[in-house]
Image 1: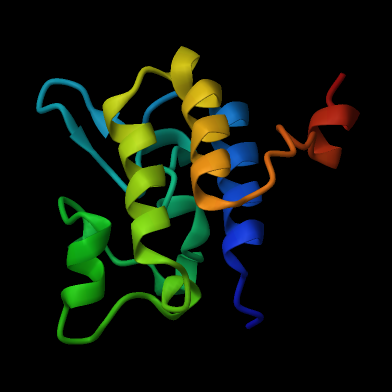
Image 2 (image 1 turned 90 degrees about the vertical axis):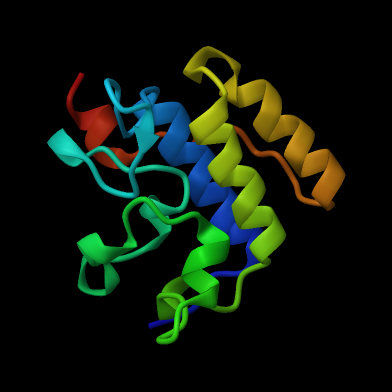
Length: 127
């Protein structure tokens, strides 16, 4: 498995969040999830492949994933924890209509390039 750079991970999260345009959470408990019903995923959850995901990760912040005895999922182990924490906060704490604004601010603050949402081939073919 090729590990993503911070820029590649950021690009993937931007595309994911702006395409999904919906929080992955349990509304009545106001708890965000890495994986939810209907294929929903949070900002960090979209970076974790199915074979590395486990339900025991739920209700743990990204910093807690890095502090676990077994460590974080390999797919995110090389990424900047602070960046992942910011991305998780954008998803968890902001409304979807404000995500793009906060993602642009994150790119500027973290020295990343904001490229916007990339349209996936399946999306184009569905029109």
